[in-house]
Image 1 (cartoon, rainbow, N blue to C red):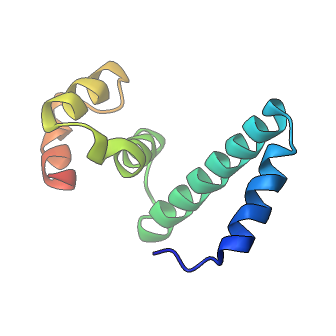
Image 2 (cartoon, one colour):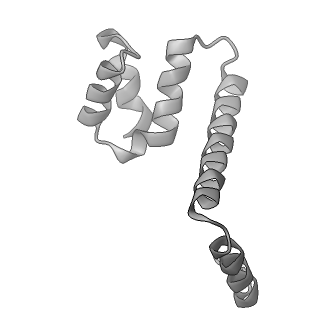
Length: 96
């Protein structure tokens, strides 16, 4: 979807380019932090009793799960020590 008028796009691009690289970087960091907070809020709303390891797993899956194959997700989750092998069936049903 692209419903932004061309002159507004140009103004926005000029505003961005007027900022220093470090300012643009910090804008991106704040946007990522906001996105993560929204993901966490959504997870907690749907499952208020979730524990910390499960929350980390859900954050990872929601933010990055579709970027990886099932095997890659499984390997990453093990390396992060987020889940035990018996919980891997949850990953299989999550994103494929």
